[in-house]
Each structure stands twice: as C-alpha cells, then as structure tokens.
Image 1 (cartoon, one colour):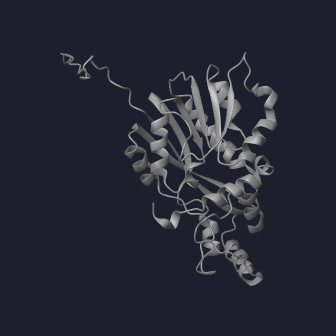
Image 2: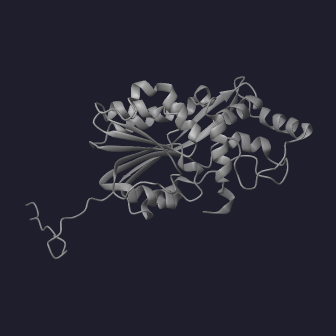
Image 3: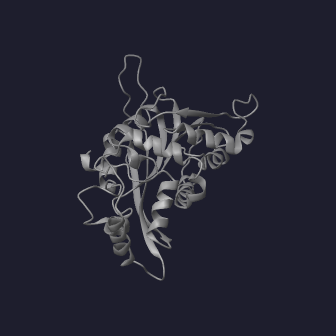
Length: 294
C-alpha cells in the first residue's frame, strides 16, 4: 500500500489498550455499524462450527454473533489485550468461558495480518471496523482466505477516504504534517479481496454523519475509542494555541443546524472461499457436463 496510508502499528495497539475503559461509552458509530452488518449477515445461509470475530474490541458483537450462530464456538481476536479483558469482564459469566456444557468463547490477542490460527479452521470471519488499521489489507485478506474452510464466509466493514473529511478540512494548511487518519478507497479494498483468492465478492458503501457541539468534542470521541491519529507522518508534539484556534475556526465554517458534522464513509463487503471440487484417487478433478435446457 502507498506509505501515505501507513499507521504505526505499535501506536495503534497502545492507543486501543488505553481506550479500553472509555470505548463503550463513545462507540456509537461502531454499534450502529455492527447492527447494519447483522442485517446483511441474516441474508446469508451458513451454519458454522467456528466463528472468528477479527478485531473484536470490547466484545459488543460477541453476544450477537453467539445468538445468531448458537451452535458455533467463537474466537474473539484483538490486537489490544485490554480490549479482550474488557469483553471478558463485561459479561464473563454469561459467556461461560470453556464450559463443558456450552459453546466456547475463546480470547486471542493477535494481529489480524498474522493470524495464529490453523489453515482451513474457521467457517465464518466477522470483522467490523478493523481492517482500516492494517497497512497491508492484501495480507489481511490472504490470511482470512488461508484460515477459512472451503465454502466459508468473510463479512467485514471498514472506513473509506471520505471518513473525517470535515476534520481534514479543519486541519488544512496548519502545517506540513498529517493530522487526520487516511483510509483507502473501496475499489482498492475490493481488489485486495479478489487478489486473496476469495470469490463472489459483494461490496457497498454508505455515509454516516455524527454531529458534535464543537471540535474538541470530535477529538475527544476519537481519543475515547482509540482512533486518534496514528499516521506515520503525524506531528510529534502538541499543536500550539494559535494553531488549535485556527483549526476550530476552520471547522466552524462547516457548522450546520447548530452542530458540527463528522462524516464516516463506511464500506461493507463479504465474499466466500471457493469450495473444493471432488477429485479422483489419482488427483484428477471431476468436471460435470450437464445437458442444456431445451
């Protein structure tokens, strides 16, 4: 991927570790996206034995996935250990971790670009608003394709380039640094999905606009969910008072109906891992010829 989109992975991890205690109160958009993904998931016919929540955060999707797939075990996987701890502490008793009498929920602290899972071991991969933190989505989708069983499903959401466009406008001309995270285009995400070997991809996009009282509230919300600036070209120090005043002034030009808008371009996608064709004892593939309908 172009380096202008690179994030510093260790800073991403540290930020989400720190935000674990404040995440749920601020994650309004994240909960809404999960709800919209579940609507899409309900249209797909699959009965999995093992589901992976790739980038599970504080576990908001976990009980919903368990309800949707009651016969499946669930892996919650996240880069930040504190996020996994928050999920466990929130409803640990309800999850019945490692119970002999219920389906298991297993926590794994790992990077979705390097999954510590066996090949062809997972039936469904669910990933909500996580892929945008990956520097190499091609590698992420290849990992998804590797661990999926033939016939398995990956369903995901991520953020597109118009995300935080108002905030980007507010910081325009302040200095030469990157102050706002940048995200890749839906078509590039789609190319990465296809190049991974997954099939029949379906993608769509929508804009969701949050509103705030002032620029400080926007920045605080991003900090509370761990989504503050992680770009490689970020400014190392704090903005001065004059520069921050300029940011606020520039953001104010976008005020509408008494509120400041903050737009998110949400990209949704899903694809399937092709089923393996049956083979003969010598390894030759079987090709079916069917008569054409009259």
